[in-house]
Length: 584
Image (cartoon, rainbow, N blue to C red; front, side, top):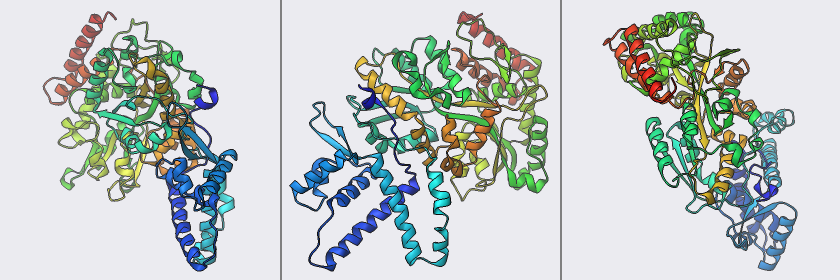
């Protein structure tokens, strides 16, 4: 594939959902207006350029295919005339052709960036002119600052993904294995648009986190992968890379095409094992503390930056007789609580492994050589465990069964004043005006213990290519990977509800920042070096260690064993796990 044809993301006009709606409204108006003009006089002549351009743009925005025959039919002029006009528009760079068959004799037609930009600007001007001519005084006033604000900001926005000049050749379509979280569900909702971009069908399977891990491992054992791309939780990188289940990206593509410097540092580092990238961050979603700004203000409380301040706030805001509790968090047995425990240990300055110290925390980038050991039964870990025991006093009665989503739903509904949660869960309250927390939420990194510092443990998923992918599918899988993780695609996910983002450029986009304060907050945390992936080091044994901690700490929270006993049991089991893996 040539460099020109293989370029995945090309510059095009910025088309936000609002811009698309405006263009479709203008196109609908022009259709009705054209019908009225046709009835005005018996003598009239259609403009084939306008008719074909309008038809092409409308079908593009509706994610519907356009063939030369259908475009000619929309022109309103004889076949020969329409064919000449269509060729003139292709030669002028207004229409792009994409092969539909291997022979290259059949094409689909798509509006170029120039055409889309022209319709975007025309739609804005037409609405402004209509408001000035026929609107109220208030509507006319709203159009006064057009040149001083709107057009300047639009020029800084990230462009949506452009269709590939050559469709991906994948028998049966692109097959993707993902996690069933809000961001990947947004991607599923955009399926038709991305099918148009890459030129082939998309089949997406989604699982819960534990089932995703199980299916990804099963897939790696198959003679040939069932999937072209797989989503992996960041801590799984070492397990899958060391087992030879993933293709190193530097072997199959020019990594510079991914613009590595644009990714949040912690997210990009977390995609590596042994100094090599094995995936591309598809979503970077730090775990934060969500808190109700209005409740804190009413109680005269400052945002809690330390665990001590958090416990004080939880005590003040905990009013179970009124149906409101202080805080919600992951306390369900196993994976959920295991994540909570090791991240809480990090808040107290204790990594779960004996990692070397460095500026900003600990270095988790040099684990491929082994030689590490678990650090669970330590004084700082005991502080973290006792902190979780204290949190129980200010938590909902069903806290021991709460996991990823259950902890955020009561927060959104006003039953909880604070919650630990990943940014990907923010749509539960940011996009529902009816919920009690809507528009009233503040975001903080994890409050720190006496020996720790504020951090936001990085979560999220990367997209990777299975090592057992069929060779004939590899090239297309690489191109799809670049499309789905591009700034253009990431912005599209955000515009349709995602609250995760792995790239600085997307977080800096003015349209993105208007959608949620999360993006500016996360970027600021990254610049302050508060986004860290060392709390969940990506060693092959991390899933087992997390499970062990989640089981022993659950018994601790239930009162079956003391915090000290729980840590000793977890340490013994983790040591045995690492010894059996040959790491001790």
